[in-house]
Length: 304
Image (tube, rainbow, N blue to C red; front, top):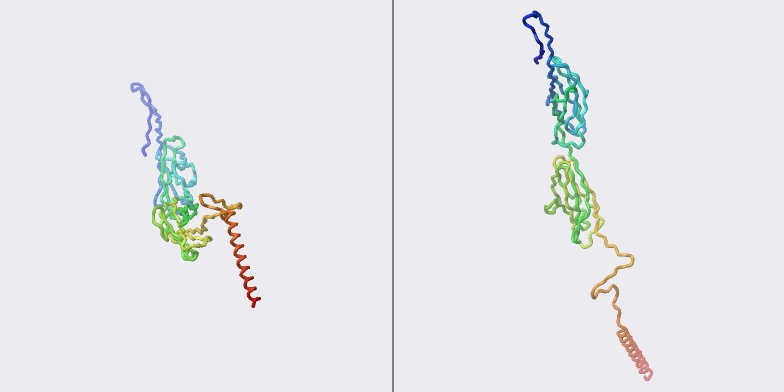
């Protein structure tokens, strides 16, 4: 670059023949940060990318520059956080940068912006965006919520699926049928079915409903339902929820049940005393008749 000098002085042209003029260099400060994007690496979350950036002194005086992360969430480490750079032909230095994305980094993410600033003049600064391609990681989690309200004709439960898009099925339908149950799933306002397709953004969640319907009068309440979620993008990624549904219970207090209401009795209705007397007289009369019949038969045999 051109180096400029200047000076202010007074020269008397009528008397002075030789004048020594000492020029002062005009200091110009500047910086340029360069990165070759062809170095961009592909990583799994938690792995580290190693890049080289070049810090160029575009001024005309030696400079010390400070390096830092201006914006981003990745862990950043520099081979040197301060770098001294001369001017002229030797006006650049290489700095190694180590970038480590967190374990929860998404495939779609923002680049990491690095900042270089002059230690002499904070207004002299430049920045560069560094990035890495993140390999997709498929993972999920199925969790069981509380039982929902029931009318007794079927029983429903909330299930939550976290992360990505998956096929969700009930893997032991035959087992449930054997024990007197039909099981179905649905997502949102969709219809119930043996399986469901769930689309969940990375880091998000989706609630589903599991419905158990008795298919006989005495279904077994001690059952286990196996719900399986499998990634549409990676069949090797799956989650299994083995749940034992909580069924409604009726508990009778130790003191018994109190029943109230019109014409409702918790014990046999009391018989009036008059009815008991009449019934007793009828029984007694019947017994006398039997006794007389027996005696009459005895007398007839004796006469013969």
